[in-house]
Amino acid sequence: MVGAGIQGLWCAWAMARRGRRVSVLSAGADPRVDPAASQASTTAGESGRLLTLLEGRPFVGSAAGAFERTVTDGGWLGREPDERSRWWAHARRAAAMDARAVAETTDWYALASARALDLWSRAARDDAHLFDGASLYQGAITRLYDSPPVASAAARQHQDRGVLVRHIEDAASLKAQVPLAESSIGAGTVRAAVVTRGLSLDIRRFVANLIEHLEGLGVTFSWNTRVTGLRWHDGERLSAVQTPAGEVAARDVILAPGAYSQPSLLEALGARITGVAGRWLLMPRPPGWAGPLKLHLTPEGQGVAGPALDLNFMAYRDQARDRDALAVGGGYIHVGGPPFATDPAQLARVDAQIASAVERLWPQWWRRCDREGAIVRSSALCVRSFTTDDRPAFVNRPTTLGGRFVLHAGLNTGTATMAPAIAEAIADVLEGTGESAGMLHPNPETAAGCSPSLPGALEARVTTTSPGAFA
Ligand SMILES: Cc1cc2nc3c(=O)[nH]c(=O)nc-3n(C[C@H](O)[C@H](O)[C@H](O)COP(=O)(O)OP(=O)(O)OC[C@H]3O[C@@H](n4cnc5c(N)ncnc54)[C@H](O)[C@@H]3O)c2cc1C
Image 1 (cartoon, rainbow, N blue to C red):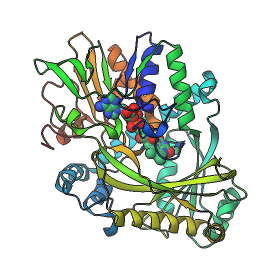
Image 2: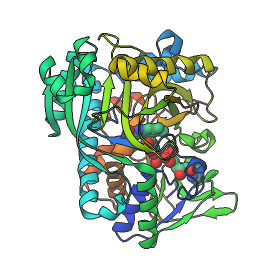
Image 3: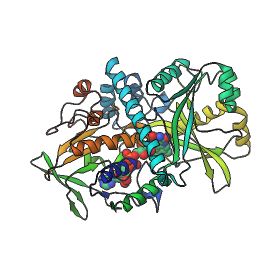
Image 4: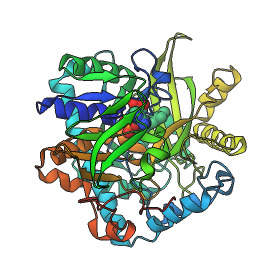
């Protein structure tokens, strides 16, 4: 297993549960010792993660055009990009997908997320120790919308997947559901809500517990061990992964390197994982806080449009200030591949949008916290792995030892949510069983058009790029 983010760890767990001997190689440090040095988006930024049906969602179709504009111009590009034409080519392919393909991709995300939510809930029930100290919240998560049609579409998706708790469209019920947002409901900034089943948790703590658990199952970890290359036999079968300390061979190899992988590692596969950065601010928790919130603002609605369209509001305990606090995160800032670089002006734009959105949601609370200097703006980036055509880039090839080599190349913003479902699908591929491997091919027809088959790829119908697209 290459990669010890949430995806790699769930994969390692899925394989260990199936009786396999598993070794994990990670370029980063042991996150139990130093989460910041683990070079993983799993442990980057604030530790809270929301797990709901729409965390992992595609940005195909019209949204793909956002890659063509900088943040200042209302798009998602975080810098004046020398690589822009490459990203465009990619996003354009996604934008060119027909309505059916967009619907299928969207449905695939919802299906995989629903499966994953069940697997998370099962783990919380059957392996409760993994959530010790992880502030697990299981219950209603409220999504607030400025656009009733967008809320209705989201409600339908949740309904179809059996995770809708309530869809609220009238102001009186909205105020009863989220009394905290009363003034923004009155002002029309919040016009609908979707209350959904979901989870939230402190992912650093969960990851630490899962690593302990895996060690107990006999899984070994090599930290600070970067895979620098892949050795192929006949250009067809993987024979080993290369590290500065030497080569490592295994029957099956899974590569889940997230956004921090070096592009050179993936080039030979014709795959490229880029990063989308978010920003966040920290503030005291408003009185009457009842659980995780999400705020969705659209250009069409009454809210603040821009890359800070979706904000997550997560409760946490601010130990340093000894107070109950909120982390408010948002923003889609496409930063290309590592090393990540952004234009400060673009970041400042996103920060201003986040601040403005929170102010519109809670005008009085915001002004009070601002007056008291209680709002902390982080200057860091949190980078999520991302593929501009929104396809989970899977490569599935044989190894010389009779197993499989699988690359999982990032699933947009929701990899944390979807990790268990993806891990099960990958485990099925390695076992050569199971229809859940079908999850890897959500839309073979259009995917074939999007990404011609890779040389030697057997089942790689869904990939990030066509070979040489970034050469
Ligand atoms: C602040 C923030 C908030 C987020 N909120 C949510 C949320 O609410 N819900 C949600 O679902 N998602 C959320 N996300 C996204 C989610 O956390 C990430 O998409 C997910 O954790 C990515 O997991 P991963 O395992 O794919 O990659 P990573 O966590 O990046 O892990 C990659 C691993 O691969 C290793 N690696 C990389 N290259 C190599 C190499 N060459 N050799 C060896 N090892 C290598 C790294 O060291 C690391 O261990 C958020 C992300 C951030 C940063």
